Length: 370
Image 1 (cartoon, helix red, strand yellow):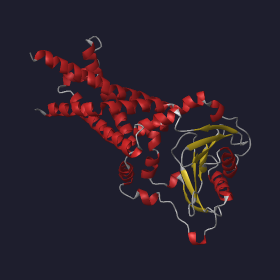
Image 2 (tube, rainbow, N blue to C red):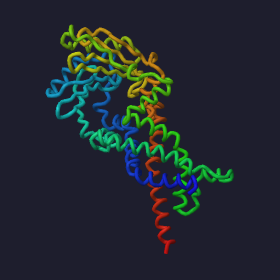
Image 3 (tube, rainbow, N blue to C red):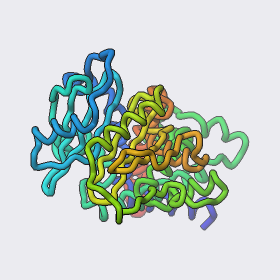
Image 4 (cartoon, rainbow, N blue to C red):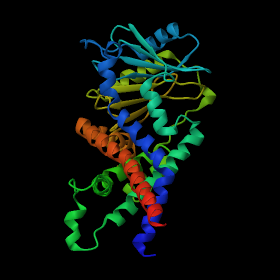
């Protein structure tokens, strides 16, 4: 067996093993690409509000309103998504999680969302876990993603033209040929054209499964370093600790607004037990989860303990925190999402066209054998 023959053998069997899962992951990725835009159209009654020339309600007020609506649930986070968007109080109990939407100016209750029944969250869970328990599903997805990366590499090796005269043919599809030849050419050329972006999407996707991938990205851009040390949450002395005060989260939110006056999106993490601090985050753009600045406050006094603005973070941490935006194309706004959608759609078609190639050769070999 020659080198390319061995690569073809590996490519074939890796594709047959992982093809169905790669197809599911890529299709769900396509669907999820524009979830914010689709939800803004189909759920505008509770996602969008009329901007007002007054400050947002304090998080403790929204927390109290959420308690009245879902008394059995405990609030974990209050998020403000923009001047023309509703605020969400994220709550949980032993049996369910509920997301409660409010008008951030008036406190008017708008909607309760249950992630177990939300279409796009179900799609996201299929994408991440195949709707299996996360400790099982994420490893199936992770291994399949690693195989997909190997398929991209082995596919490029197979595609690489042997002679200079074959270069033009390798970049084009012979549309006038029979459908099997068209399918073969399309599989090779489309795989080549999307390979670089598909590789980036696959690697950034692996960070959701394996922490070591994120650590590797961090160290690659920092030429070493310790991500855990840079992202470590500060601690407080619990021996002189007073009970958590609702005013502490309000003070933390007000200070965050003053520290980041140009930011559009904010969150406030509510302490859940004794010793937990209040953490807040600010983002410069609505529905963009990169370039975040983080602040940590004392849960009793609301005094600022530690700040970590985006510009003070290491390059490695900045890239790691941009991971979601890179993976979804969000980092380039709408054009980036369109690119991610097209690449994911083509990647979903590759296992199908690859299976057709394998099945056609199998049938052909059976005919030739007698």
